[in-house]
Amino acid sequence: PQEERLRFVGGFFWQNQKHDIQQRYKIDGLSSELSTPGWPDTLWLTKQLRTDEQKAIFGELTYDFTEKLSATVGFRYFQNDNSLEGFFGYSTGYSSNPEKGEAACEAIYGPDKTQWPPYNGAPCKQFDKSVSENGTLGKINLTYSLSDTVMFYGTYSEGYRPGGINRRATLPPYLADYLDNIEFGWKTSWMENRLVFNGAVFQQKWNDFQFSILGANGLTEIKNANQAEVNGLEMDVNWAATYNLTVSAGFGWYDSELTENYCGTLDANGNPETDCADPEAPAGTRLPITPEFKGNLNARYTWD
Image (tube, rainbow, N blue to C red):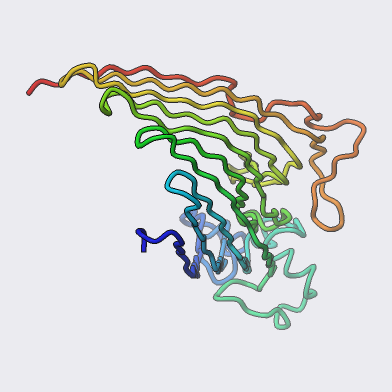
C-alpha cells in the first residue's frame, strides 16, 4: 500500500518467442542443377528456427525514513536462452563454398546424401547454435523532498541487454552488455506549477557494449566492443508563459569514449580482445552515433 512507510512491488517475467524463418530467392526457369534440392527455381534457401526465451524475477522495496527522505533498493535475476538452427545457402551445382548450403552439408556429413539428417524440407540441418546466460542486477536510490515542489535524488543502478546469435550463422554469438549508472538529479516546479525545471548528471560504465554494423548482403551484424564510459548532463525546462503560450527547452552534454582498445576479435571464451598492435578503434575513441551536445527549443501557441 502506497500510504505505508514500507512498500514493496515485485513480479515474474517470462517470454518465449519463436521465429520460423523461410526465405527463397527465386529465379523462374532456373535449372534443377542450380536450384536447391526440393525447392524448384530457388537459387538460395534459408530454412531456420530461432528461439529466444527470457525469464526474470524482480522487485523493489521502499522505506520512508521521514516525510522528506525515502530509500529504495531493487533487484532483478534473469535467465536467457537463445538458439538458432537450420540451413542456409545454395546447391552444390551453384557454389562449392563449404560454409554455405549443400556444400556445408557435405563437409559436415560426407558425400552420401542419404546420411544427411533432414531438416524441415531443407537438404540438412547445417548448424545448431545456442547461448545461455544469467545474472543479477541491483539498484539503490535515495530521494529527498525539500518541499512539495522541489525534490533531489541519487541513484546507483545496473542494467543489461541480453546476448544472442547473429542472423548470419557463420558469425559468433554476441554477449550481454551491462551498464553501471551513477546519477544525481532534481525535479522542481515553480510559479504555481507554471514553470518546471528538471535535470540530472550521471556517469555510466558500459561493459562489453553491443554495436551493430551493416554487413555483407545487407545483413546486420551485432558485435561486442569492450568497455566504454559516458559522463553526461541533461536538463529540461517547461514554462507556461500564458494560458495559450508554452515554451520548452532541453539540453544534453555527453563525454563518451572507449576506455579500452577495440581489436575486432574475440578470445577463446567469446570475450572481446583489447591487446592488439593495430586496434580498429583505440581507447579514447568517441562512441559511434553519440553527439557531444543535443538541444531543442520549442514555443507553442494555441487558440481557444
